[in-house]
Length: 218
Image 1 (cartoon, rainbow, N blue to C red):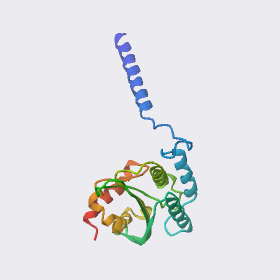
Image 2: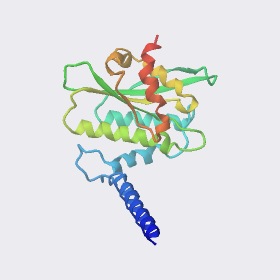
Image 3: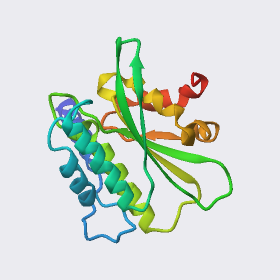
Image 4: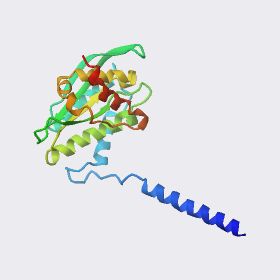
């Protein structure tokens, strides 16, 4: 009887621990669109996502062009100057190549040090879906981050926002962005600080590429 009671108490204790862990691991409540403009709002980010992740937009399609233009116009509306890098991306491991259009914008900081932080995500999608999770949610979060930072006091360090193209056709196409002057001239300062806004931890490869590419850039 004692053994049975001890087992029940142990199971009850484990249930309490697991329940507490699940409660503590929950994400914070979404910040509404009515929040101060200098705060990040998940509802505002969702508005961006609903605008550009409506239909599949793989590279080379009219919908891809629409999404690209929408992102560029949004970035301009935040008071930043986006640059589009149009180049040919090659992925030897998959034996694919094609035109890519990476979008990059820089938010200047107030500090005198050359250090910069780069936030990255990709805006193309697979042909089978609108890419809301991969990587539309990340791109929407980047847009809202840009907007919130512009509405608040300027950051100490420069922040570089990179929206890469052609990821679904082969991740190595993101290496083409390393040829952009704004990145090429900065790479020694921010090579250890890239952050990729992705939906899964398994997609950390983009960060690893961006950290390692300085040794491979021409």
